[in-house]
Image (cartoon, rainbow, N blue to C red; front, side, top):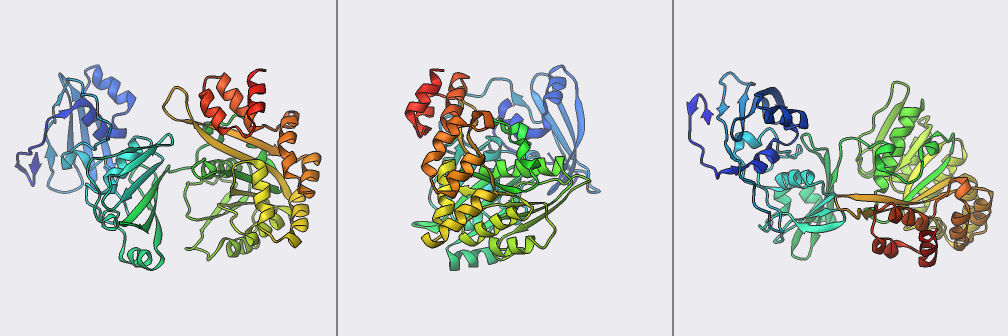
Length: 468
């Protein structure tokens, strides 16, 4: 390599073609890879927010090689071609290891936490690797091997055990003090070219642990979610409450963000969100306005933020989590007074989501809440994510309850046990039961029968649908 105009020897292990492809990441697009494979020398400019701008040359006479030339300072530093063995890399062992990379090559491609200066071997690199593997989560703890969750299953990301997680995550002095006092702290950091990461660090037996959720830059479209039933009509409702429910990790936040983005795209609205923390990016159209507020940063509580929001001329309100009676009551009031409210609740089914709302209140208040919910509720989406039968990802299975006159009467009377039969009979009204959705996915070869059986609340109904 060249440093300050002087040639210097850089000693690194010989790299496989896969190592270089991984390091190039998004720079080695399918179009560029095809041109290189055809014998062309591909030249382009790559801008790294943390390391400046590079002129990049890709070529492949006998082996793939890359040249990076920094262009942002007066003294140009260049990296000579890095030859890569044309022999295929051996099959990787069960633990995933991040390849050792020369600094000039890894600099433009490896995402780093923007909130702090983090060593190259720290979770910044682990997060980059987790993102490349399309993991949903990364788990790190003092004295333990880091793990990633891919398609719902945990697997080791490296052989080495982590030490001093707080330092590796680059937590600020303020965050560390909060961690010491409260026992946990949550930080949202942006990654260079790889979305964002929500880091939840907490004290545990043995030291500090952290759960890192990988988030994309922008909310996905409804079309890209692969939902088994159309949901886009819900965002066109002039008012009402739409609840998205499911267990942790079921994709509730993703669906909520996709609904919000669809509303911004299709309508001329003011959309106000209350989130903890702000996650997916939302893009307003020329006809729409979006205002995002983070609980704990922009507003003290969901309840306080929702009270404020009602004075902010909103058309659509997005509530990241309806977690307490006060927030639920305000959401119902907003839905009754001409606003469309999109909110999430931790519940495994449509009926349990309704019961969760009822149980938030003492018995003497429940009749009033049931009446209010029967008037305000428009739909409940209960979802899960299930591994693809062919491997390589998960697909959503959904239970969709739409509020008809019969459903409203059932809610008013508190007979949540009758919701299952209303779902089965409501197909003409656009409803979908969990068991029918599971059966459809099994017949399409998308999920395994054993996975469907493990999720079905009514095994008999699943069997009947499979026999249709």
